[in-house]
Image 1: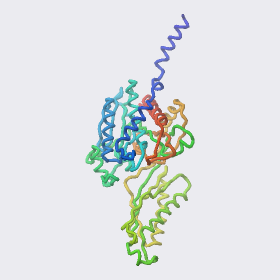
Image 2: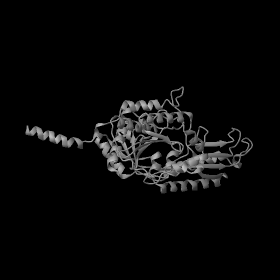
Image 3: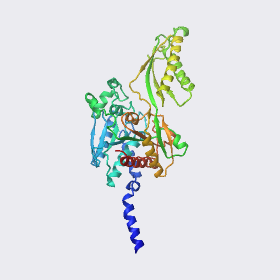
Image 4: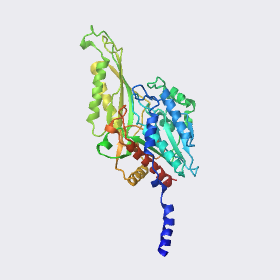
Length: 431
């Protein structure tokens, strides 16, 4: 009898100390269904989905997310930058929120997982907490950022780094960023009210597909992001002279397209001449007048450079600019670099949050590695105002920004469970 009483006493002492966190997990089937449900917004006859920011499909998907949040009694609104914001109250409302989320807009001809996994996993985390009646001290804030693919617009606004010069930039819908924010329910005249200061957010977390093949290749389940590369964009103009293609001798031409072609090769040569993981890309080119019997007189190409170091980005750009000067001199074509206001600085993830993510991964007995992100994310801008962390899950064959993009249900659930456990751990740790 005495032994029995001792056992009962120990159980009564230990049980309150056992965390409910380890007993709850996301519903894998429900998470996958959310992904498929979201994919219906913008579905085409060929079965693929088109949902570029500011499109009718983007607006409809945004409203669907709001309905999902309101069904969980989450206080929800659209801020002046067009971001969807949902707040789950904490037991200590004066505490700063733990924020998490991603985006649901897509690149043209994109896939169902980029941004969407993090967004739908965030909904699932809130649903699981609601089902299990788990209360957190901190308010929990879900953010579905607007127009991530068009220059991380919503997150830049929250970080206070979205300038009015960006308002005139158009995406493939034909709407400018300014017009698009208004379509989403924002208000460009009150954008300053969206900006937050350092300390306004206790922590920010983003779950995302890797968009590369490293995790799959190494047979790993989770990537803990240590930093996000910076990226800078330019429009590069080539001004030559449009003339008759049949009557102008080859040695008398100022062919803007030929100069642009040499420039594209130079970009690749410069980027590969540096040691490191920097990348430089020309992904868009427009030639005028665009007739087969006219020498191109005006060309505009894009230029993008990415690296974890701003210094490296500047060195690569300087080397590319020098090669452009040489091409200009040889060809007689003027070359001008126009820097675009759709850039982001490198962001190192918070070491404390990385540690908590790692502990959550270990508790779930998942395989993992620390790794950089070669793609830009909303977390990059949130890191300017809050301690920030990112969780990666594998992308099948490393494919992203493509209809063939795919992440399995189990991988999505693994990432969502890491997100869930990390949020709960940070809630206990942060003041």
